[in-house]
Picture 1 (spheres, rainbow, N blue to C red):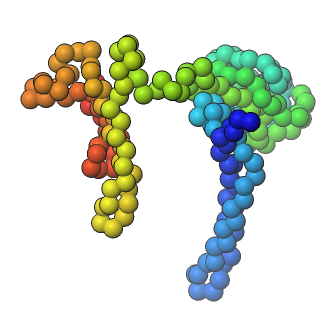
Picture 2 (picture 1 turned 90 degrees about the vertical axis):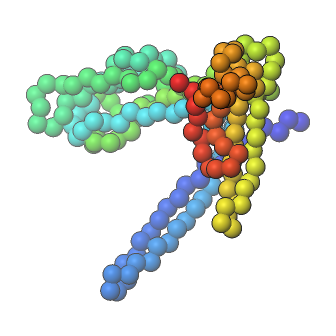
Picture 3 (picture 1 turned 90 degrees about the horizontal axis):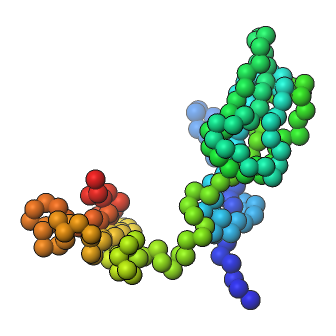
Length: 198
C-alpha cells in the first residue's frame, strides 16, 4: 500500500466579544475540514471569479469540466443602475471545477462566487527525485544546505542553495574576487532567500 502525503485544510474562525472599557475577548476556533494531496497543493493553483457588482446575471459562458484560455469570456451581467451589460474575461487559463447554480435573470451580489477553476502552477510531470539536479549539467546537483540556527535564543530555519558548476566560467568559485560569485540564494547564517542572479 502506498501512502500518499496529504496536507490538512484548516479553517480558522475568530469571534470577538466586546467587554467593558474597550476590552475585547477573542475566541479562536481552528478546525480541520478536509485534506488535499501534497502533490495537488504544490502543483495546482485554484482561482475564483466573483460577481463584479450587484446586478442581474445575463449569461455564464462556461460549464464545469471545460478548459478555458486567458482572455476568453467568463460571464455577462447588467449592473444595478446601468442600461447595458458588461462582459468579463478570464485573467488566467485553466479547467473549470465548479459553476454557481445561477441562471440568466437571477440577481447576484458583489463578491458572489460564480466560477471556480484551477491550473497547474508547476509541471506535475516533473520527477521530484531530479529537482536537486542542475538543468543541463548532466546530473550535477545543487549544493543544498539547511539547518536550524540559534538566534538570540530562538531556533530559526536557514537555507542556502548554490550552483556548484555554473555554465558561465565567470561564475565559478575561483572568480569570486571578480564579484561574480556562483549563482546562489539564501544564507547559511541568516534567514534570507535573497539571491545574486541577474
